Amino acid sequence: MKLESQGILISLIPFNERDAVARVFTRDYGVLVGMLRGALGVKKNRPLVGQFGNVVWGARLDSQLGVFHWDAEKNIGAKILLNSNSLMFMNAAFDLLNTLLPEREAY
Image 1 (cartoon, rainbow, N blue to C red):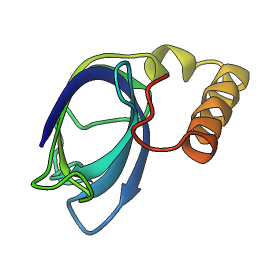
Image 2: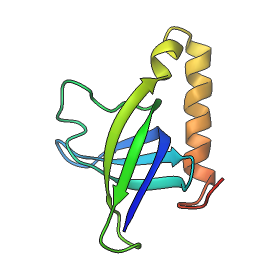
Image 3: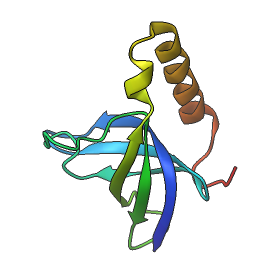
Image 4: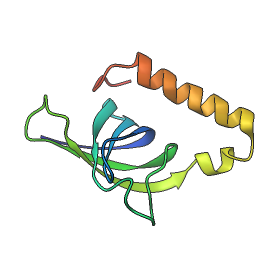
């Protein structure tokens, strides 16, 4: 199974030295969860929370965790880092999306 969409990276949870479990809020599929291979090991083009981009989620079965391929387009977090209140609001909004929205429900 393969899903392609545009979305925003809302969470990165370290899994081991190089990989991370990522949550992406997509335009077509809602929140997708998957493994982002090499996310913590790269030095250039490292995925960051708050980035917009194109995402491809793939898994053999629909019930599996799956693997992401992430192509970042722009980072809203870079502009927000200068203002601590805006950064707190962005983090709170992403935490609400993580907590309240179920996986793969279109919104």
